[in-house]
Length: 264
Length: 285
Image: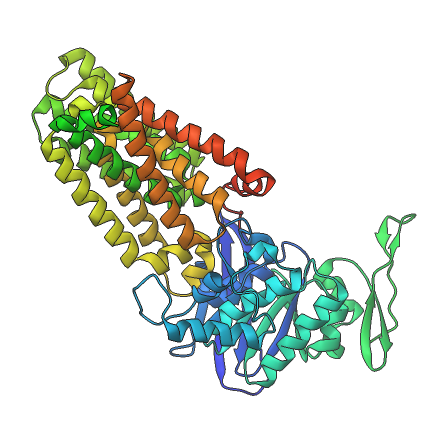
C-alpha cells in the first residue's frame, strides 16, 4: 500500500512482531517513500512504537519481510517518556552522540563543535548547548532529540509521539519545524494520539490497531467506520474548513462511546 | 608533617598507597558507567562471585589472576546474559549466581583450609597483602581499562544513555554491555586485594555518586569520579595506617564521609542529582 510518489525507502510485507509470544503487530504491509510525511494513529498498545522499531530493525520479526533501500540513513526520535532525563548529559553531548564520523577521540573536534552548533542554531536552540537536557522546556527537549537525529543526516526521520505532553503552542512549533524539514526533502513518519492536529498538518495518515486498518489522505481515512475499526468505538467526524474534525463523546447512560457519524 | 610522611619510608606502605590510589581511580572511572546504567547491584554481586574463583585458584595452586580472572569473566558474561534476556528477574538471577559463587569460595576455604593468599584480605582488604607485583598489576589494569573505555567512549556513552536509539544507529549495544562487564570484572579483580570483595561495591558507587552531585555533564562526571576515587584511596590508605585500621573499611568510610560532605554542601540541587541515579527508564511498546 503506497500513497506518495518518491523512491521507496522501506517496505514491510506481511510483517508480524511479538514480545514474549504476544503479537504487537500482525501482517503489516506498508511502504515509506522518499519525501513522504505520514502520521500513524491508533489506540495505546496498538503497535505504533513497534511499527517504528520494525522500520528501524530493532525488533525481531516473526514473519514477513522488511526491505530497506541500500545505505538508508534513518533518524529516530524516541518518546520523551522513555528518555532518561536524569542522565548527566548536556545538550551538545546529547546531539553529538548520533554523529557517525568514525572519530575515536572522546573530545569534540572543532568541526564537530561547529556542526553541533549549526544544527542547534538551525533548530532555534543555539544558545542551549551547555545546558543539561532536563533544564529545557518540552518543545526545546524535542528539538534536542530532533537535532540529534538530524546530525546523522537521515533520509527518513521516525518520531514516536513528538507532540505528547506539550502545550498547544509547542505542538504547533514542533509541527511547523517538521513541515520545514519535510519541505527540505526529508521523509517523516510520526506516531501520535492527536487525530485532529495530524489531520490539519499531515498529508498522509495510517490508522492501525496491530494491523493496518487504513491509510491515505486524512479526509479519506478519518471516517467513523475506520475510526471504529481502529479504536473499537464509534466517533463523530465533522468537517471544518475542508478538514475532518473528530469528536469523541462518551454516553455514560449507555456506557459506550456514542455512535454517530455525519461523514467526512 | 614528618609524622605523616614517615610511613612512606616503608616499601609495603608505598606499594599500598599506589595500589589504593589507582584502585580508587579505577573504581571511580568504571563506577560512572555502573551507576548510570543502574548496575550497582551487579557490581556488588560480581565482586562476591569473583571470590569463588579466588578461593579455587588458591586451593589449586593456580595463578590468582588467571583463576579468579577466568571465574570473573565467566560470571560477568553470565550476569550480562541473564540481565539482557530477562527470562527471570535479573535481580534474583544475579543474586543466585553471585551468592552461590561467594558461598562456594567460603566452603572451599572451610573444607580445604586457607592456603596462599590471605582469606581476610580478600574479604576486607589489607595493605599487608600488597606485593610489588600487585602494584604493576593495578597500574597495568588501570591503563588498559581507561584506554579501552576511552577508545569506545562515544558508542559506550550512546549505549549507556539511550540503548534503543544507539542500536538503531548502528551501535552493537550487546557487545558494549559485555565489554563493560568485562571491564568491571577486571577492575574488581585488580582491586580486591586492597579493598576486599565485600567493600569494592562501595568504592565503585561512591565516587560516581559524589561526582554526579557536582556536575550534569557526562565527561566532567567521568573526570571528577576518577579524581575523587583516587583521592579517597590515597586518604583512606594513609588513615588506615595512622589509625591502625583495615584498609578496605577505612577507604570506604572516607568515601562515605566525602559523600556526606558533598551532599550537605551541594544542597537541594546536588540531592536532586543524586536522587536521580535510578535504573534507566523502561521502554514502551
